[in-house]
Image (cartoon, rainbow over all chains, first blue to last red):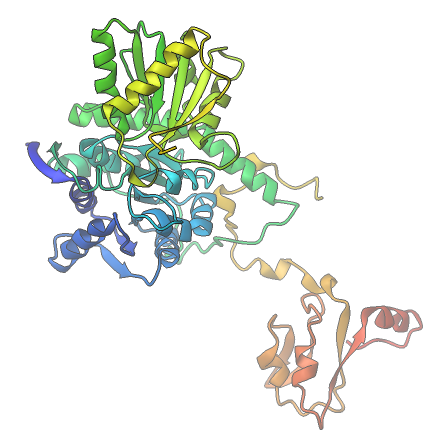
Length: 392
Length: 110
């Protein structure tokens, strides 16, 4: 029987990894991911999993060892945060281009500098073009559930791509929340046994992983990789529906909130969605038709879903917990605006917030909706990019 | 560009090469700007060249050096550098010189 317990985000994700019982985990500790590695190492030491745990000397090695294990035919996992993800960066591209179904929880933390250990999304947004799928979680339950969903998505024979399960450092990773955990049999049956169609330890069928491909073949390989991501949406939808059937908890690409008759809306990723929902309820009581769209699946890009959710509206704000330093707003804003291009003429604004763990409370989100009211009425200034909660 | 090669739909997933031992088919010898020329008269068969060659292009039979695999030798010159100084059984010459010598029918090594 599924049961209700209180766990931190990292405890819940470590438990999910224990229930998956992967063949290999190669990981290096980094705040705020540390206790995933710590808990998993104790599961290994106590014989609660049969996983081979590889203690590596860096995240570059963690991802390299995970790639090696996956290519060998193992179900392989790792986990990281911030600088660790940045140190893995070149290997992230290797994992996706060789189509290795690795699952990696990433506990979102600001990238240096200045050095900081708290939440923002600059680490995973920096990895948005590495060819991995990105699932973002709002709370501990979603982090737990997405870990299983990610495993089955990654290993789906039609896909075979690595998946990041991203959740907010400290806000989710270290907060104790009430969640439902599933029996081992339920989640093991859902994840299933990993049966790679080819693997390097299959000595009877030797083949090459990681060859050189120059101008005569490289482009075709990248085109094929792009096609895998084009097809990923079908797999994500199918697996998410299967999880809903297995556990009763379903997740879409987006989680729209009070959008049916909304006139203005915020697009947000991660734990701030919960804060924003409270703001929406407050505005609704005042008669303001406010709505909210939380993005759960960022890669593959939920283009049609966003177009459907945000059309028609009078004004939209995209909240970015990262800056891209492009001289034009954050990464999520650039993406969402591009997804909507030609599909709606809705005026849009970008709010960059919460960098380095700066707290975001209901009144901050209300200020965004207040700006949306002006934008909808054509009374906002020409500024498109705003910084929310920063001292002037 | 090899326009007769497979399109992206026909390539194995993840850039894998499913046929093992295929490196032999990739003839890297045409990368060469200089070629090692082996003089069997001088060679003492110490096999330093065989040990040091990074491309396994020194052909050895029954413990003796018998020639160089020019289809794969990239002309790095390590064999000539490692050949003992009192022996110098391998010398590097420019490929252009080797081609000119071949034209005049003088041969240019193996």
